[in-house]
Structures are given as structure tokens and as C-alpha cells.
Amino acid sequence: MTDAPEIQLNVTEDRLGQRLDRFLADCCPDLSRNRIKALILEGAVDQAGATITDPSYRVKPGACVTLVMPPPLDLAV
Image 1 (spheres, rainbow, N blue to C red):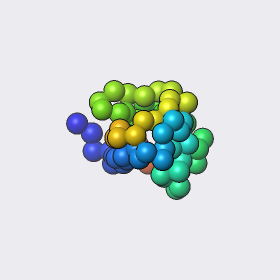
Image 2: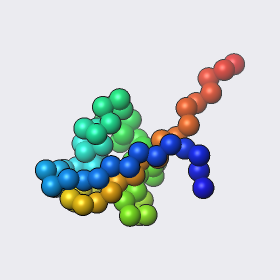
Image 3: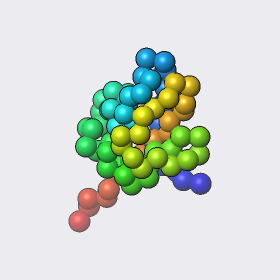
Image 4: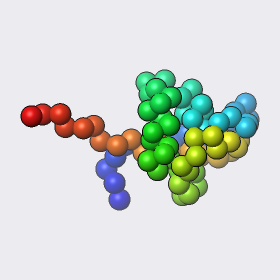
């Protein structure tokens, strides 16, 4: 089990067919779409326990998408 914070988002009817990266960008305005794409490619997004690594995956209403945020990098020298 990880201590990384998770963001759980429910897909609503108005999001039918929207790309995963666009859906997450709309729901998480503090993250850039490029950052979201990188997180998807790193395996930080899942739906019903299955990892999604395709940014162009089309979301479906009723699904719960989970984004696991990695811990911040320690930049101390």
C-alpha cells in the first residue's frame, strides 16, 4: 500500500467519450495536460483496479478514475 495521495473522480454523462488526458486536465486544473499525460504514461491512473497508460483512452460515464500523485521531489542539496 502506498502513502501517495489519490484523487478519485467519477465520470459523468456529459464526459462520454472524452479523452482521459482531457478529462483529468478539466478535473485537475492545477496540473498541466503535459504533466497529466506523463502521469498516465507512468501508470499513475487506474479505473476499477486496471492501470490505464493510454492518454487517448475514452472515458465512460459511471466509471471511477483514480489518479495517484507521486510524492514531490526532494530538491535539497
